[in-house]
Image 1 (cartoon, helix red, strand yellow):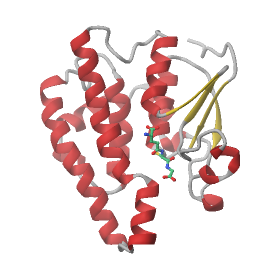
Image 2 (cartoon, protein in one colour):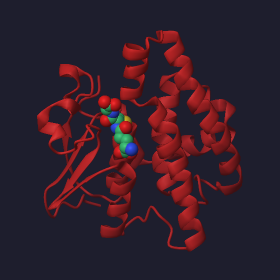
Image 3 (cartoon, protein in one colour):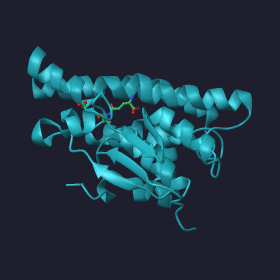
Length: 220
Ligand SMILES: N[C@@H](CCC(=O)N[C@@H](CS)C(=O)NCC(=O)O)C(=O)O
């Protein structure tokens, strides 16, 4: 299927940003073509803090999606928007019970696990609180491991081939980037068998492969 580009669609992001990674997967699954505007989160004091970007998102966080006339931040809101406007390859089930299960599990990852290990939190801990690299590593591992213990219990009862049943949902779009982060910081994901199995299956899907950090133009 040829990607759909009926108007200008721009994703501001960074290759290693897991929130951007979620949105790249969503755009790929829905076959929506987009341009990438690369915001380097470390170079030049962090390009997210430069007026070029902070004028678009005063939170100074990626991703931002511009879809024609619409400018959006917050990856969960962006994916919700994409699902409503471009219903091909639905990410959020229609059935009430499944819909809220999917939203809750996605938030367990994106709202409760991810923000504790975000760059600005880690920079504050290192630069202002003065924690050492080893303590920083422990902080990251602690919050991911704690979150994954609960997630593993939940997925053990909801997963089929994927996190919830046998269709790819929003949960999977949050899970794969979070596992990428976990591995980056040496969390042993094989101790979470359901998470591990689902992620292995998702990683062979072309939409996930194309969205992977190492396959982005700014990867280094
Ligand atoms: N809740 C936001 C989180 C966005 C976020 O934390 N982005 C990170 C990269 S994954 C970022 O831009 N960090 C820059 C910084 O901390 O200065 C979302 O889901 O979009």
